[in-house]
Length: 96
Length: 131
Image 1 (tube, rainbow over the protein chains, first blue to last red):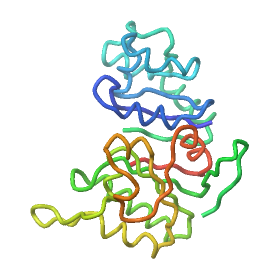
Image 2: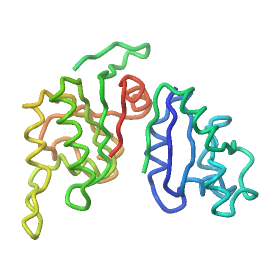
Image 3: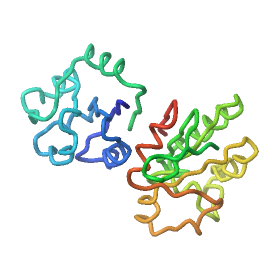
């Protein structure tokens, strides 16, 4: 299982498409930095195939005032959760 | 370059390091840094595969030149890949098609990757670096 990290806003950059195209059926996606904009309900349709495998970083959501505005499907993790996700993955791949 | 037969009958490349190149020449230093990383890894005996994706496919385009102020491009490095035993050159099919390009526009022979082969490619390399 690969943990994919996305730090670009899916609303403005096509990076998310590259990430999604490279994801296997068990891979997980963690939204960090501007990537957390992908956790907004308006972006939810991008990630419908990722049930249970989509995560967003709490600290980056909070900093942007998005913590209470997230779609249900985004699992919110803090930095410790980030570490745990990294431990559980065979490797990580960053998309920026 | 090693290949393993997988369940679907597709051939998937495996190796130590997969470098994904997603930025075009000249516009930024990402492409050059990715290629440099690949060369260093190969010099240390790692089996390196290159995946040209997105605007990165432009790195392989025939007919590249120096930039307007004489800046070196990256096409010289592409010519050196074989010298470093980097022979696994992969291109994302979608990246080519969406830019109206075909493998005939490219400097070197490449393998085209599409669909489900892409995640498998990442899975089959110990380390994946994105540029």
